[in-house]
Amino acid sequence: MYAVPDQTGRTVVVTGANSGTGKEAVRRLAAAGARVIMAVRTPVRGEHARDEILAQNPQARLEVRRIDLADLASVREFADGVLADGPLDLLVNNAGVMAPPTRMTTADGFELQFGSNFLGPFALTLHLLPGLLAAPAPRVATMSSGTASYGRIHFDDLQWKQRRYSANRSYAQSKLADLIFARHLADIARERGWHLLSAAAHPGYTHTNLQSAGASLGRDKPKRSLLNGLPILPSQQVEQGVEPLLYAATSPDAAAGAYYGPGGRFGLVGPTATARIPRRALDDATAARLWAQAERLTGVATPR
Picture 1 (spheres, one colour):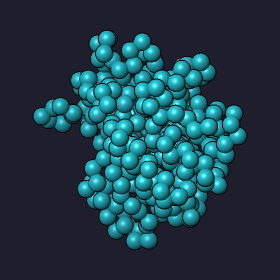
Picture 2 (cartoon, rainbow, N blue to C red):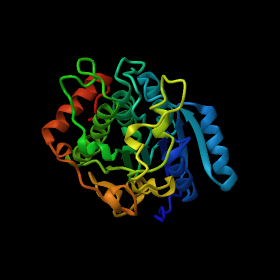
Picture 3 (tube, rainbow, N blue to C red):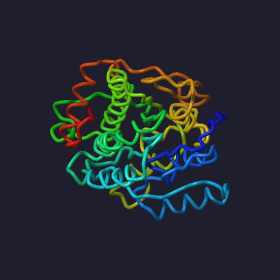
């Protein structure tokens, strides 16, 4: 099991902190001494998760705050509150929605997966950059997915308005965008001399409620996504699935712009290893174009 290095004195934001990999990341970061802001869409669920962690570790420093990544006004309000506290050492972009069965939209009119999984975290990261850059050794760790390997950025129809909506391909586009974002942020940091490390991770095939929550949106009965409905594939529990993200977030050996995932069978399970970066995530022109589009859509500019 990956041992999180000492995080005493560090302030951390984890999105999607009430369940799955987010909750496990909070538990282990707090156990290592971090003060953790649990960023959640539903505070009651966040408070329940906080209480569970505190029952195991009464010394944990946890605070629940609301954010809805599908609402840019909520993202800005949350970021303003964090910035008012002072420097931020680590942002863990973990939250996401997976494969809703029909095309849905965010509060700002974006296709739900592209908006929640990419544009929301993009805006949050840029809003929080002043706080991150005020910290001595800041990091941004962003959760992608193995589906990024077959994702495509459809610049002619990012919101799936013209083509027939595909839950799986839309999800893959959003997670490819996350990977491109994490790598391009690392490039920008290097170009501008920022002391910021940005890296990405994916959890392989990890059992969380992500598989059923998104696929059940708009349905009367719970349903699992086809992306994760294959019991013949090797799978793992959240304690191991979160480790690539924790490695990207805290390891002294993590590299800027790197991508981490399980190193076992088919890249779905096992201890953390460097993951293969899809060819489409390596194109600098695509990265710059996507970044510019995200700035335009969110109205959030990269600090100079």
